[in-house]
Image (tube, rainbow, N blue to C red; front, side, top):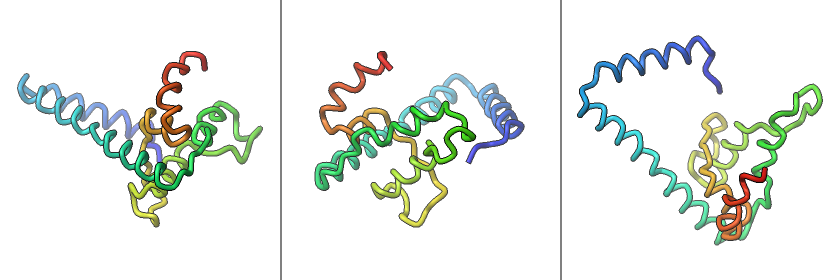
Length: 133
């Protein structure tokens, strides 16, 4: 679900006002909290590696289809996959959210996405080929 533009602008203004009122130490603590909060990437990657290794179910590029088709208008490709729906499907499949939760979306770290598609070969070869896309 996407925030309406007016709500997004309001949110950004509130965030900027919050940061403006911080001392340097508060800002550093805030920044570290945000940065370290992203260490959830390790949890997502380890979950994907563990479950993919056990099941052997690789996606062979299926997770990249929504991204590759996102520029095509829906009137031309009405059944094109949604980027948002894949983030939900992925999170339910790997147990990162409840299987009955159809609204929460979890972003897939790129390194984890390469692994879920092509195993270690994707991790080793995928990032270096991104500039050729």
